[in-house]
Image (tube, rainbow, N blue to C red; front, side, top):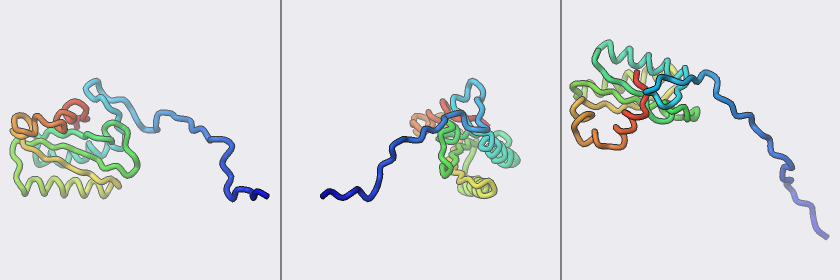
Length: 139
């Protein structure tokens, strides 16, 4: 005599309606990804704070949040390029990232480079810098 299985397998699979997420918009033609309105607001807030001290800062969001493919727990990658960077400046930018990220429930990770590193140094030939230039969302 055969016994009945203890667990039943579902007879149907629930289908999910896949639509464009609420609050996501297409950006300009230089921005290949999609960034949520909330992430754009956070990027703008971060950029304003950095540019209060460094008006010539070049800032890009990159990674899954700039592409619009982030999960709820994805970090927010931001690249900051300045004419000159030292430990104190790098530390200050990371503190700004922590404060704004904490206020907005995001983990903001920063890559801080000086112009020479970004444009002419070994980093300029890296895949990372190439992706930031090609797919990053400028602030």
